[in-house]
Each structure stands twice: as C-alpha cells, then as structure tokens.
Image 1 (cartoon, one colour):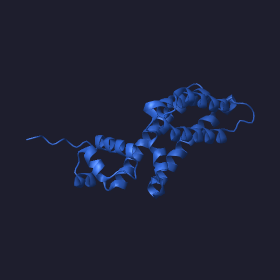
Image 2 (cartoon, rainbow, N blue to C red; image 1 turned 120 degrees about the vertical axis):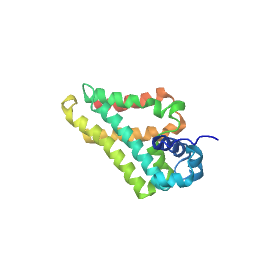
Image 3 (cartoon, rainbow, N blue to C red; image 1 turned 135 degrees about the horizontal axis):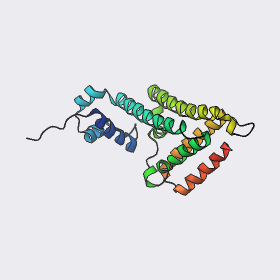
Amino acid sequence: MARPRSFDPDQALDLARDVFWQKGFQATSLDDITAATGLAKPSLYAAFGDKNALFLKILERYHARIVAHAGRIINGGPSARDAVHTWLTGFVPFCSGVKGKRGCLSINTSADGAAEQKGVRKRVEAFNRKVEELLRDRLRADRNQFAEGFDPDATAHTIMAIYTGLMVMAKDAPDAARVRATLDQVLKLLS
C-alpha cells in the first residue's frame, strides 16, 4: 500500500502558484490545481477555501516575498542611486530570455482580467503602491544626491511604470541586453 503524501501547505501553495502562473487565473481549473498538488478537492477546500481564496493566499505570499526582497535592496547600499541600480538590474533575468518568459504573476494577473475581482485588484494595487513607496522613500531620503529639480515622487512612479512595462513585455522573452539598455535609460533619471 502506497503511503499518502504528507500535506505541506507551503509546497501545495507553490505548486498551485506555478499552475496559476503558467495558465493564468481565468484558465486555471480546480482540476488543474488538484492534479498539480495531489490534493483532492475536499482537502483543497478545507485547507485553502475556493479557487479565489487559494489564489489570494498565493498572491499575498508572492507579493510579500517580492516586497521583502525589494526592501532589502532598495534600503541597502551606500546611496539611492546604487540601491535602485542594484534592484533594477537584479530583475533583468526575470523580464528577459527564457527565464523571464513567464513574466510576473502580479502583472499577468492584471492582464488576465483577474484584477476585475475586488480582492485581487486591491492586492495588486497595494503591492504596486508598496514597491513605489520603497523607491520614493529612498529617493527622498537621499534627495541631496541628485540635481536641483529632481522629483523623487515622479521618478519613483516612472521607475514603477518601466518595471511594469518590462514585466508585461517579458512574455515575449526579450534579449537581456535590450532590457539592460532600457534600464540604463531609467538610471539616467537618477543623475
């Protein structure tokens, strides 16, 4: 008799996340999720609730990881310029080439139409605000490093717009050199 696989909620969330990431929220069925996780529907419902509740939990974990990572990088470094440079160049692999082809789960969710759901939209908006806030706060703190007339708020918003655009374009697996060239242009804002 085969021993049943022990239930690891983090592993189940990661497996379900990968299905949502590959197929999109709208196209993912509960059958897809049960096949990926090995959980029966009753177990899935008991552990996470319905498909929407499961996805919200996945999105919260995904956002928390990215915000924590971005916070460490953006708040580190000797200067805002260096920190933002490190953060921007650090996501080149995630928005170029084969590795970047799956894009950003959060951006894909918005493009998929799932953001029409209030809970999803609120989480995506909160995530975008938080990352932009990290950028803005660091740029404001190091304001004296930049030329007169430098606008930390507008610059943070522009960086977020470029980040979002690059993550949308990631599905086309652009060349990493092209992504770096785009980021080099963004970094000129930090002169």
